[in-house]
Picture: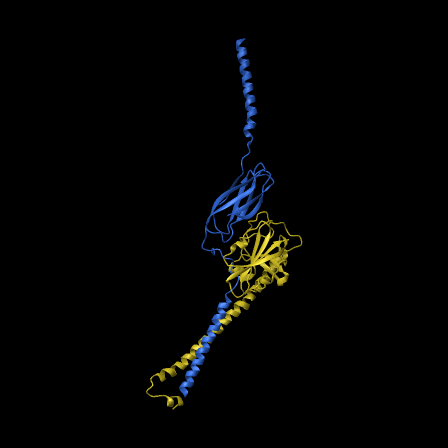
Length: 215
Length: 171
């Protein structure tokens, strides 16, 4: 007879249920730890694993766009209603302060943003005489192209290289806005650029917006 | 003699009438006074992201016109030598459903006065519109991290409770 059963009061009917609760508590503890490991694995995947998807897509996009970025670019299209499909290579964005050099794709839908920063399809193009070019990028996940967007300071250089020419912009300021503040991408009379990303890091509660003017 | 006089008078009148008609014809063809400027749109029922072609006639040749949507600047178009212009604008994402005003501002046909003309279009939202949010470019990882922390705490609590109960039963 075990010490536990020797010590137990034979009239105590709860001791049996108590002894049965021990394996149940152990099982619950294990279930919690396994669940925590699964969720942690998911977090690791979305934070770093998704970058593998983006890296592969960027490699393909760069090979598509690089031949078009020639020294003497072709003239901008007459009709600004040219159709570009979501996910297609759109421009190369270079931001020295952020050590960023990536290919921007057309579109800001979920699938397009998995490949890299995305050009708002409703915004203007860099080769337009007027208007605002708007580009969104992930702050975390999918190689986190705009991880350091908050590091940009007034006067920092942003370059967009396209098949119609290379366009330089200088940062003029930044702002944290609610996700509903779509007016930040509204057209402007002067040629401007706006970069948007989620804010703060690891959250999508707000948007960080950086404004720049073409030089 | 009388008949000759009547004939010559008739010929003279016919000649005068012909001259009058010939002289009056070009006057009728002239567009004077010049027509006032006008504008038009190719579609009046649009969704955010759609392109709308805005065109106009009888504006100041060689000038530019500014185009606004709901009072916000959208683009500038060049007016051709015949006073016409045509450009496409994109209805911005996040534009609210309902009537929207496209206005064109520029110099009129005399190139002296600024004119502002408007057209009303209707914006409708489809099922795919996000209701006007900026793109989702993050992940609420902090929520998942809290879930992990919560599961670890609860799991640890179960483990400690199990050990304590086991110790208690062994005594």
